[in-house]
Length: 264
Image (cartoon, rainbow, N blue to C red; front, side):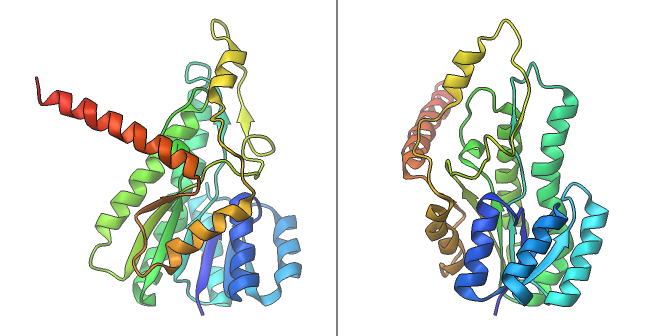
């Protein structure tokens, strides 16, 4: 039986995946959440298959201590999912350096804070997998999402770098790029900065809407499970076919632009 560590386990895609792991596969999850209430609720719901790790991914020292405590209860993990994060809205001009640092601290440093203390354990665990949660905003950019996009591009770089650094080990690394899902990502859990003149707030907001179909979180499950069930973990996988078509077109445009460099 696999033992999992999932950050952001109490909401959004993290909650959906946690539920699927426990109810569908009957495997144990060490769930990282900031919410004591959510941890208690999930403990009652899932029983011994859920071991709470109440900590903020921003706090590397406390998180490492709490993870060690949870591992003593649940056993050594061999599956890691870094789903914790939030979206900061606002133009790059309007966002303060503090707001951008906060975004980076949670989405980027928080990702590394989960992974780093677990790597020695994964090396001893045998075949293991790490899934970093990026976004379609880690591949393409829209207005008002600059801070979030910067952080998700960084998550993509973490994934690619880890994969290369862990070559020759039994640890596989992959990255999932969710499209729009009904998770409260852009509403309940988002942070927003007012758009100042001379920007036209309504126009930017309209341009920031990707226009893709917003799916239920459960629609991500076939992609999620493919990352763990495929004989070799895919390097990356998107959860929106509409976005994949867009991303391919964007990539082809970049290839054309790079080829122009050869003419200089």
